Length: 69
Image (tube, rainbow, N blue to C red; front, side, top):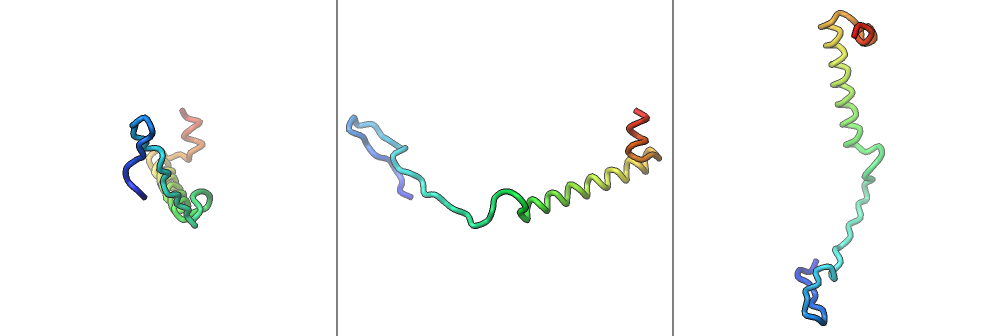
C-alpha cells in the first residue's frame, strides 16, 4: 500500500484518496469454525463443573437449589 496522500487543487492534503487494499479470507469468519467450537466446548465444561460444585456444596440439584431461594 502506498503511504502519504494526495494534494488537491486547494493545497489541502487528502488522506482518503488512497483506498486500502482489500483482503479476502478463504476461511469463514462466522458459524461453525474451529475457534467457535473450542470456545463452546470450554464454556460447557465450565458450566458442568460449576453444576457439580453447586450440588456438592448444597446437597441439592440445580432445580432444588433454585426452589429453595
